[in-house]
Image (cartoon, rainbow, N blue to C red; front, side):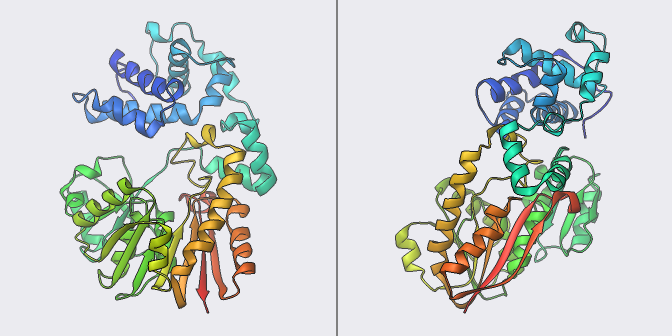
Length: 402
């Protein structure tokens, strides 16, 4: 939610423009551009920082709509970015009579913003929109697109081996950080008002992690028992790895693998903060896969994907995602399934997961794998739709090796 009634000091407007220039002109991702700008202005208060960050992300999210309102279809430069910033603030009702807004007509902007064409209204490039329409159909795609057109909520995963959900809620409430329990879950909390959670003592003690509720469903889907041997073969920075360790009560062994050493290093730091001792990390190579053949009782393959389920959280994806990338990533997914599944022992359970909404990356990939690997059998799957849950979109399939 964008903060209202904040005074529009020139440095704040310039901060938004600077972040947008880094994103639109220099090609940085917005989640890199915004922190860089905030770091350069350490004296800004929390309200100022939120104002700059949230408006920047919203302008990125609504880029095509804003340019439509300005009737601009040429290249972007600093002058256009300034007009985009002003136009967005007018559309949100956050403007004044200063020179910054003088050459923008609010009535014209609001009239053009009433466009009904979904690709423009939700700021999706035509080529990507047509591709997703073909996969999902208009009713499903536009329903999900609308659900992902607003800022993402913040969810916490309570480390239940360290603290109960109720006690964490009470502790955060004492810091004026209100949360609510997510129905149907054991350890998920939803933050009701934006706050700097990572600065809290509770976070530093490892009592919780910031993790989307949809993402947390994947660990529950695999549901490893305490004492098991688990391999998380696409661990990244380890959000799901840490959840698995919590489910296992920090008993057993988890081997967290990835192709990027920096992410595994971050995972090690997070495990230390969470006081998790059962995680070992390894850069994944053919030799590492061979060494771990038939070792895992549980295997998680959270594979690279199009990210069509997390557009709400990553608004840049609408501009950056291409049809060629989606086609290419499907081959990577199938290769991972074929190679990494050899690390599962007979009788073991495997979850194949993506943050995609596309059948071609999800059930169709699982079906293709099962056709070529008769020693595996399908147990169940689940598609998490943003429109139905409010969470990010995820797919997960549970398979067993006979």
